[in-house]
Image 1 (cartoon, rainbow, N blue to C red):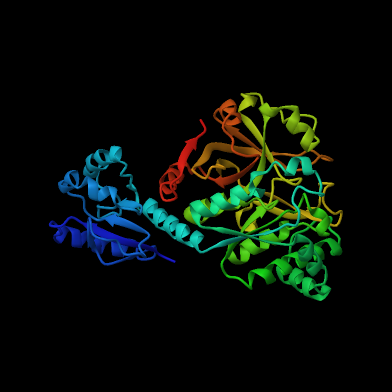
Image 2 (cartoon, rainbow, N blue to C red; image 1 turned 180 degrees about the horizontal axis):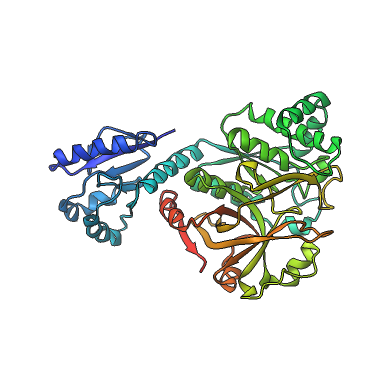
Length: 442
């Protein structure tokens, strides 16, 4: 998929410089964008255009404010031969901004390509669906008092997601999925195990086989509908519906087709993952945040006695863990990856978990806000890992942020997406494509 860009020019005013830069864009963005036939500013835009691009800005722009205000697509400014804005564009960009004309002006070629990727993601979401397996979330399951608080199960959430991004959420029975998985022949699962050479420690053959069968059952459903771009299961609250967990399935399906997953059926996490990973291409995962400042409330949940000893500014640190370990991390993103027996008592004793690690170093935490109008972002540093034998945190990560108190006052959820590297500058850029304000947590 390529972004469909319609070049705009000032009429009169199209000249050789415009056409020369148009040729440059065609070469620089050959893999990322399809350039439609140029049209003059003020003319009707082709319906299929994802965005408009100005290969050239002229002083005429100061006298065409009303025409700029009628543009109903993202506005890119790429006027240099290097695939960026030119420094003399800043005056026009800043002049138009108070009139509500928001321009996207990348300052390196990689940013321009990421903008094109984000435009493709925006179009993809309007044609896409998230599949969630659940039956009666928060009613008659495990830990209902906790799970029924989650916004992603609200009809309002699903409707807002559709209104803002166009993505639909479809639901199927987890109970029926679990039953279909059990009915898959052992031989089919064993063949997958042999072909994949899965790293595992302490697992019975039956536990590994069950996890693979669930993967095969989900994969079968995906093959019936190619509009599904993300899948989630209410795997903890309704864990009685299956004798296993989907952790292995999510890892394998990402490896096969880059499918986005949502632990606990969290569609807000799936949305955040899809927007950022598809646009930026960086490694990512979902996990729980336990800021040290949360104190005993977090410690009790993870069944641990205390946070790891941090000598300098412990209040600016966060323990991250999910389902006994760091969380579901595909092999492609991992520095270490092993399947182990389940940790949480809430799931079937036959279930498993992924014990994996992201590389240490710069990291970004991000989550789309429930209002769907902004995204919260904080940059930090993944300092290392800590183990608590016998607890619900056998191998968790430790992240340092700049201000733990600011973090506590601004988080949008206990589930956050971790992205490797510092991504704030790129998130600021692509957020404009999705009409999201960026709330940086300092």
